[in-house]
Amino acid sequence: MLKKKKKENMDTPENISEPTPENLTEEQQLKDQQAETVETEEIPGPTAEDKLKDELSQANDKYLRLYAEFDNFRRRTQKERAEARETEGKELIIALLPVLDDFERAQRAMETAVDVAPVKEGVTLIQNKLKNILTQKGLAEMGSIGSPFDADLHEAITNIPAPTDDLKGKVIDEMEKGYTLKDRVIRFAKVIVGA
Image 1 (cartoon, rainbow, N blue to C red):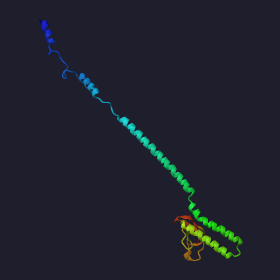
Image 2: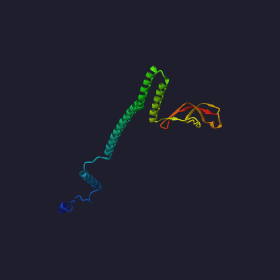
Image 3: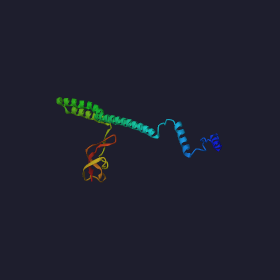
């Protein structure tokens, strides 16, 4: 009977232990939690590394495009500058062509001329025409005689004793005129200075 009782006690539902959260060991609980997270985990989105690679490729693409645009701009400006250098004197040359024509006419007139006065007058007219054209383009003569010597404007060829004391250190004579183009010296005046 005793054996029977023991058997009955074991078969009763009270004695059969079902796993409950209290009865489970820590290992089993961890395994259960991992299984639950695996079941609830969704498909992973782009990782931070993928995002950075995408940003890097976009930045490289943008860099290459900007570099290509700059290279095209540089080539275009070099070409424009070369063309501008080739034709930079075009306006002046076109303006001087009538003066050249006048000189050719003067030469033909000098071949048959008997009197010098009309030829002289014609050359003076041509000179005035040339000066007017150059003045319109920004050329100006420098007045040097009687002004104090200035190394920024004059080139002293020699100095001579000044005829009067007030001419000491001043320009007495001018061997070659000096010119400025739009207020910038393009040729220094060659002068003689009083000492």
